[in-house]
Length: 548
Image (tube, rainbow, N blue to C red):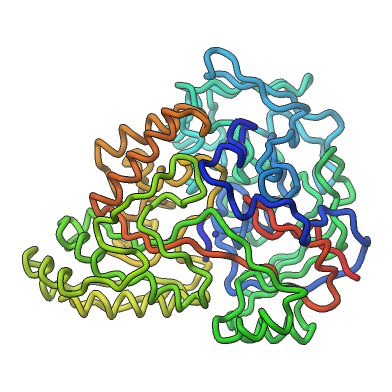
């Protein structure tokens, strides 16, 4: 998922290196058993892209949405390794695979009700998936392997049928047929896109009036670019999913991260989603260390380069960017919360194999601007006009300005365009925008290398809500990605294919990766920090919070 941010077989144990986030949870991580009641006010720097589970694809949205819309499968509410374990959500048991891994079946729990009191029906699941496909969601690609999904999308009839989904409202049974085995599909059933909604939910963006869901919280107010409010859902009862401690959570949209940090220090805000600004970090790390903590994440930060547009259709230009980027300089913009990297895959993900030596030089060293200049001269693109895209979220304007200056330094004629964080990724993911290059990042949706490599898979390209911003369509990469998604992350062949695809991405200069970010938990004095849990997939878990 973008940040403006398991099958049991795909658990954190499948990673080739232990995650720092996979700790014992001794520091914090209450899991929802703390003091009950009360209200908190928190902040985000920009409005979530959507407050509609069919559409949202950012950390801003998912931190809230996973507590409102429970899918058939969900993740255990725990930190680190334990938190990557899949457990039943609205399904009575984990879906069972049959037919050589091409058929999944499950039964909706009896007696489930939405937050508005309506009963949950098996047919609501098909409606939920129809909305994802019909609205051309960024998550559409995950559900296209369902038999009939492609035909449903092409027909353009919202209430049409997806032949590969059979439901029985009387028994609650749901059967899903796939065109081929998909080693990620249980994780796909755990994504927010599959968070079940009523069968009469309209085929439109419902962010201003989010639909009822099945979760510990419900949305009771949504004023775009100002605030949204979540309150406890008294109809919620799913075993192993905590009901939450806080009664009401109000999220304010506050663009200034400095103001947010000061408000948390002084108790006017109880939590800020983005990390504090780098100039305040030394003070916060020392004076407020009892309520501030940084967490490793499975993420990648990179500059995208649209290969359908000049000058990035030329490999020499993309190579020049990779030679010139100085990850160490970028790390300073993050206050030291960025770990420089050469690989596109994060180091803690299954299939990661360090590319050493890095073809573009030491990722922790200075960039080679002179080499980049030579490549631009050789490409014949010196002086070519380029628009660099970035958002107005914290550090993003500075990253965009750094990148713009760098492109000018190596011989291109670059200018910066800044877009509001709430619409940034949908804007650059729209083919009509013709975004040439700019800032991008990705946080894992689930612990499988395919979840990162679909960003460079030619088959994932779509006209709107496109996640493959660089429009990478390399037959060799596509072939390796197909091998990656065919099995679980524990499979050695899957890991080998992931490492090979990663190497092809880097050596082909298809993207310009520059590092992995740490996120933070920073709470007000009135919050009990021992309750707070940081989830390996969904980041800070609001349902674990409690007041002192």
